[in-house]
Image (cartoon, rainbow, N blue to C red; front, side, top):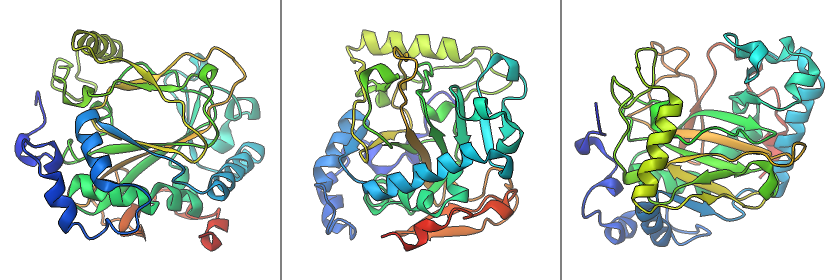
Amino acid sequence: MREFDYNTLPWIDKKQADIGGFVKQYNRQQNLPYDLTEKLEFWRQNGYVILEQAIPAAWVDQLWSEVEELFEHNEKYRLKVQVDLPEYAGREVQEAKDLPKNVINGKHIKIMDFHNSSVIGKKIMLHNSIVAFLEAVFGERVVAMQSLLFKYGSQQPTHQDFAYVVSENPSHLAASWIALEDVQPDSGPLYYYPGSHVNKKFDFGNGIFYNHESTHDPNDFARFIEANCERLGQTRKPLLIKKGDVLLWHAALAHGGDAITSPDQTRKSFVSHYSSVNAYRHHRQQPDAEPVRHSYNGADVFAHPKLQDHEDIFDTGRGMN
């Protein structure tokens, strides 16, 4: 595969997509805190939208208090943590309980799928403002696939998500980046290239997805994307948003993490990836079994089949509306 299959693209990515006609018949447009037509038109042109103050501050604070509990008492928890440090090469994914406190509460870590353990995490990733927009984009019921929590900036090279996060229909993929604090310019903010979602795809030597058979690597990917964006006049833009704001982006939007110029400056954020009900049918950890579903606002997220004892252990969010 060298491009997405045109026949299976979301309706909005096809030629002559009728946004006005779609919105007139879309039954979720009522009572949204934003103009859906305006946001869909912006998405079609730029590959992203920002939903200002979409997540209540109390929800953000509750989520981060649970993360702090994980940091403080990590010996109690089996949640998976990815560690991007040289001494963990070849064993990057660890259980929280097996990490020293200075590592789990330090830089270069990503907490994986915290939402499985947290009710408020599920409510945030499937907030109505997010679900209503992505359901409109996909034209189908939304399924949240996974999440990552960051305390510090990722400093990840420029990339497009579809190469690494794969659903059964690769064009039915989107992501959210939720600010858990005001983003500071020296924190290594996320950056993105507006309009890059329509650019030509990179060939890893075996297609557009990166895997163990690829003959090109993520650095080759980053160089190709950046050169292509520069050639097309697409300018890199930093994401300097406020606590509770949400960036939603297209599967093929070029983005990355800037350098952290103030070493102790945090960039607390919650990232989630989404697909549609017909493109993500099973949990990636148990692809042959029917998943256990949690539903919020007409969308689903699957229980983690290998961490059943940790599902919703942080349950304060049940009473939060």
